[in-house]
Length: 321
Image 1 (cartoon, rainbow, N blue to C red):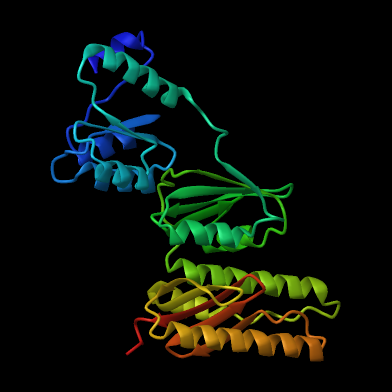
Image 2 (cartoon, one colour; image 1 turned 45 degrees about the horizontal axis):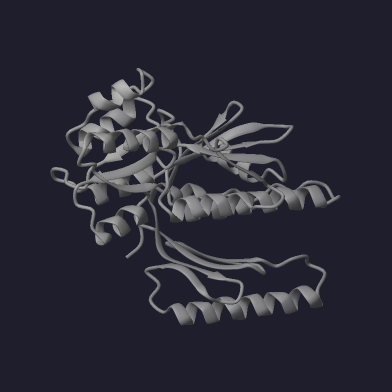
């Protein structure tokens, strides 16, 4: 490291860590641009540590530097987030070449964050991908009327804020945005947790609220009081997702969790989607895209559109048997 300090002419600020927990503590305290990881580490090997880094700090560039340069190690490191896999130099000149490579990687900066247009990409789809990937990130959403953030930690939605509102109400308000821009930023702890419950249920509740607001705007008659969100109050604090299935519009399973019979669920979703299409053609009721079944101890929801079929069952663990 002393060699790199000299070669960088003081531009590099370097931090040493002898173990994975020490390295994670440095990452919490300091803004790190580049992490150089050895494969041989105490308690946790380099590949496992890369997996943690890639999940918690996706924007930190990662390089594996090792004397054990096997093809197996190379494949494992690159598959778990390392940008480069480099064998340790054996002579002094090799360290000069290594410095040039690392310096180029450390100073290279892509456009900050991930940008998108909500008119082209569904915000719920972005959240779903982050949660399924068990990522940690901050989703910044804004349009001309509002600006807010959704905090996702290890695939769990923990906090949302927009204006003076926080928690689930803020989350639902942001999910109701019809158009605007979003930016996916590296995770920073909000210092508070205002949202509990599984992300699948939170997305379903936000979709329900969004649909009710849309229906109210399209209905010229006198406003009718919306039904109280009993399910949200009774189920959310002790809710547990008991089954999840996500398919493509053609019925190809993309993700499943604790689904006893995937083919049976796919057939059910396709049948419901087909009947919904026929019902929509026969009656002027608008687009039929969600079926909910509410029971005292659980709630089951089927979502379907041209590109995606979703089946989620949520149980109240305090009353479920």
